[in-house]
Length: 292
Picture 1: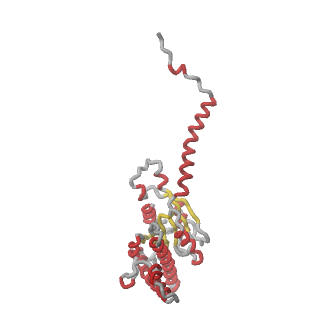
Picture 2: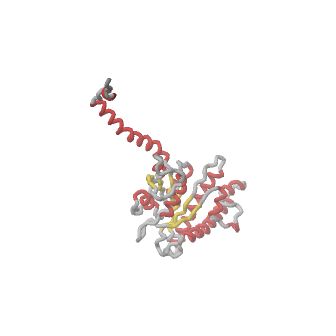
Picture 3: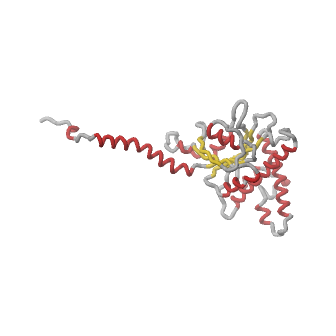
């Protein structure tokens, strides 16, 4: 007794059926991509880019996105860019994740939201902090040349330091209030990015830190005096809420380390967006990866 080939009993597939099966096979990866992208694009972690006008925020934002900076321009409204971390930049949330994990690529993406630095437009930054949309960190970009007494013509440099410190004081105070409010929010880490360190007149990162701390000490004292001199005599609670850092600090001196009491981590790292030998933002990339 002879045995027939089992495949001979199978019906001959029609061309239409083959074409349909082929199209389904091709469409499955596309559908999966659309589903994953649509569910993650709105939930990507955001890093706010804040700082005084002229610090180089727009150039930094485009450098992170495209790998090359755009010419500096004054921003009138916030704008958001989707960027991808460099391949070798470690991501804190993915330290136990394999690169073969299909969701690994998503963890390498984030949104950079640039905010205007002009004094009349800084409310955009405060609004973004007050209503955080998945904000994982804040980069406060400063011009390290403008903070140096030798960075320009005396008064202009001093004005730059004062304005930068006042703006930074208001940002840090807003973060502190959100942590200590009746409905506390998760603390947001802050990177003070000292830009233009490729220039000879720029202050190195440690001096940027100490210079800003000294100036914020003055800003804090003036703000407290103005509150105390107001007509309201019952200001004990308000004064404490408006006081940045430790209430009883050493000799009234402010230090960024005082914000650790509120779980707000502040770091100062140097780099440059534009330079004769190219940009150097490796330390800033490493910080971004650490907060994702």
